[in-house]
View 1 (cartoon, rainbow, N blue to C red):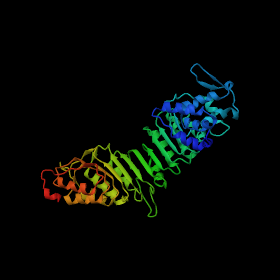
View 2: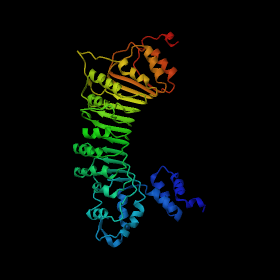
View 3: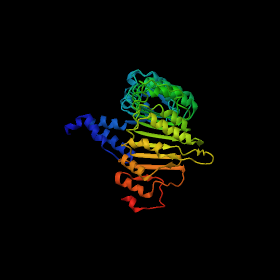
View 4: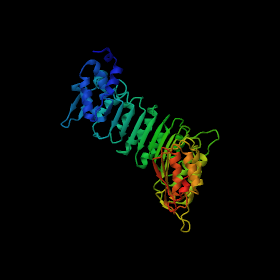
Length: 432
């Protein structure tokens, strides 16, 4: 055998390049490699157990001494004798290889009875899962409340799904204080109590890089605004003003590292309130949706864009996606007023890196002249998608269809364009 196979790291790298579209076949290949020889066994087992589930861990309990547990007719395991530290060695030989774990997803919630949980808590050799780096869990699993004593300190990514007995959610408060290395957290649950425990969880994080959640309270928002590591933030349901009182000292920075932001609000005012806190955020992408608002007034739009451009530094912006179109637009004396390009688009002309601009507005957008379209095209040489749509718009006088030639001249990457134009008159000399 070639000497390179004696280096386990090199062997593992080679095995990682073995691929197959069918996961069952791929696992079968790795299983056969593990049985080939001693040099192949360790690296192949690492790949076999890199991703695992609660059910696979449960089946490992059969490696415990046969007289220490009993099985009923349904193959349920119950531990009946005290276990020595060495009794866990065959189990730990596999669980220490797990890097990505799912708990509760498609597993039987009652798999782990009290005798197993008591033995796991008292595990004398440390954590049952010392090297897990990412964890998906829902609180339907009996293991949910015990995860802080089972999963080691290397956990950096967690996803919590809202499903199961609500009484178990109190464990979330200890998650953030136990796993100090958490960088990515996704919290999804619709119950009000889930919002409460999500808030406790977020308020106790140390250095998150990515956060995605349905909703949290104002204390959690204030805490996350001070994170110096937070780069990506996604909020599924913004149903109140996150910063009802925003007193910021001149030397204070909020969201100092925030690069990508997605907001889904029930009212444009909540979007406006949030963007006022982005004074120092180095935003690259911003997605803001007011998709459940029953009405959208003209002032809601103008106030939002005014707050966005007056408080945010958008020079690094590559993607801007604003949707204020879903609500019923409020007219003034039966007239739907149009927004002006000078208010909505002019401040973006300094964003030379802009690649995607999508605006879905409840009111029409007036572009004063073909010359302004020329300015847009020159300002955004890297634009790939430009979409300007309105729910209530009057037929435009400008720009004319010939103004679109500006994009063909200055925007070689443009592949999608949605914009109201006046196509009633075509003057070929406009193209010269």
